[in-house]
Structures are given as C-alpha cells and as structure tokens.
Image (cartoon, rainbow, N blue to C red; front, side):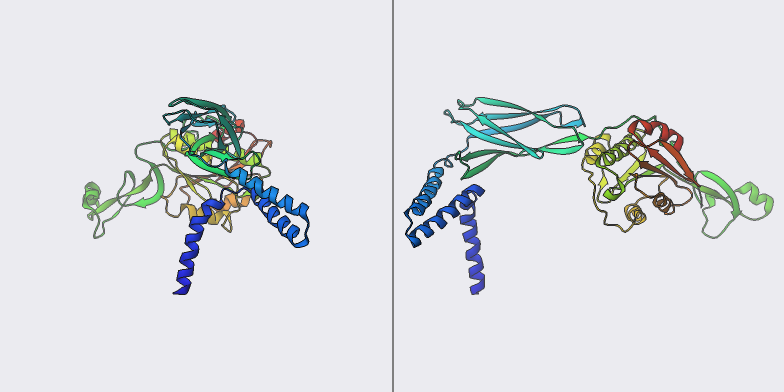
Length: 401
C-alpha cells in the first residue's frame, strides 16, 4: 500500500514539475549547476568572489524568466508545393502566420524543422487578422520523405537559458520520388490476355484443352466428351491445362552489404521503381516486397511514395531464399519473379530464389553495378541483367524478357 502511494505521489510530482523544468535548456542547467557550486564553494571557504559569481548566474536565470511568459495568438499553416517531386526537382514551402487576436501582437520567433535541418523565422508585430508569409526552399537532391514541421513558437531569452515552445501547426510530408526511366509497354515480359497464362498444371475444369481421360465418379458431366464416349464405349471426360492471371512479384534486397555505395543503392531503388511503374501501367497484378515492408502497388503514386521510405538495413533473414520464401508465402503463384539487388549480391542467390518457384514461373535478376558494363547472362532458365546506369534498363529489360 505504501509503495503504491509513493508511486502515485511520484507520478503527480513528475506531472506537475516536469513541464516547469522542461523550459530550462542545456545551457540553463549548466548555468544553474555552476551557480549552486560556486555559491557553496564561496560560502564554505569564505570566498566572496565565488559568491558574487553564483549570485550573478542565478540572477541571469531569474531575468530570463521574464522572456518565457505570454500566450501564442497565432494561427499557422504549412504549405508545400508540390507535395511530390522527383529527386533533383525544385520544391518550395510557405509558412502562413495569422494574428488571431483582436489587438496587435508583438514580435515572436517561429522555428520550422525541415528534414534534418531547421529554419527560423522572425515574425514581426502583426495587426489583428493580418497574415505574415515566409517562403523557404526544400532540398530535394536525394530520394526521401522530408517532414516539414511541426511549426513551433519559441519564447526565451537571448542567452538561451530558458526556452518555452508551443506547437502551432502539424507536420507536412514531402515525397521526393526516385528517378525513373520509361519502359516500353509490356516490356516486363507479361502475358496480357483475357484467359490468363497457360501452365503445365493439369486441371479438371479450365479453358485450355489438354487431353481426354476415362470418367471417374465425381467428375462433372458437363465435361464428358460424348462423341468419343460413343466411339469407345466408355465415358471420357476432358482435361485442361490450368490458366493463371499474370502475377508479378518484385523482390528488392535492402541488405546494405550487397551494395558497394549509397549511390548504387539509390540506383537500385530507381530500377525497382521503373519496373514497378511500368507493370502497374500495363494493368498487371504486382506485389513489391523488401525485407521490412510490402510497398503499396495499386497506383503509380502509392508505389513511388512508398519507395521513398526504402532504406538500407541489416536483413533479419539468414539468406535471400528465406526472405523470398517468407515474403511470398501468402501470395498467389507468380508468373514472373524479378529480384533487384546490388553488385555484391551473389549470383547463386538469384538461383536459390528461382528454385523456390516452379517451371511455370519466369525468374529475372537485376544486378545493379554503378558504372559497370551493361550485360545479360543466362543460367538455364534464369536470366541476370547487370545494370550500370538507369539508361541501360529499357534495353536490357527487352532482352531479358
């Protein structure tokens, strides 16, 4: 019982005192600590100079208190134009600050985190309902999801001892898409027909006729071939070759040890995005998978948005084969499997992925080697394309498929 009361009391103390102590910055804590230490030393040793120094530091903290009081009376909006760009394109942002008070406001400071950096704006005194506009540029030289915001109002002294912040606007995301290259329609080697793709699997009911066999109890009489049955004197039924809709699985290895550099990893993401965009435009069902996520692939925009979030990582799987098995376990049998990886990806891993699927599945590997010579090699039914630059992709895709 006593322990519960102490725990409850400590939580209330933290809840009450926490917000008060949070306004003290790192520099403020350093000054406060120095003030206590110098005062203790000065009083214990009788050194007046240390006492004066401690009192001066404490006075600085007391003066700083005057700068953190006051209420924020602003309405703030963050606008990005556009919300989606390709790496290297220009993106601009706008911060709109409106004074919602019925009287003139004082000058204030607004901070806006943008990606890894932060922009600081000085808002001048504003009359009631007046809007102040600040423009800023967003760096988009690399693929990323850049978060602008939240915008915060900052109150504090010039020395940075105390700092009180109030959130004024929520964050806005800017998607910097990877660079892609256009591929020819159906360049991914997909079957596009109404019936689907014929496989070697025998089925009792489908479209592609295969052969006749003797009737067995339970067979559907709709498939009895009466003419042959009359000629042979026993019931004969049709057999069919199973047909499947074109289903493509696109596997991307994010394992950092397979890539020689960050630029090579970015090139691999561009290859992935280029293939995925064309498959979606062809109207083929596609699943795009990495070790830590499945990318949305219903539309081109959703695929490119999710490709912005791909990062190099240390794979939790023992091998690429394990990754492919786990990622495709609940998916329909694919007609085409494509694997995208870096220059340090072993060719044997492409073959291990191919071995997971049957003879009806075509497997194509894309080995990204920054600045390498583009080439296409074949190992039995497996084809591996080496991509040196994004410009090599359309030609090699046509040859590989």
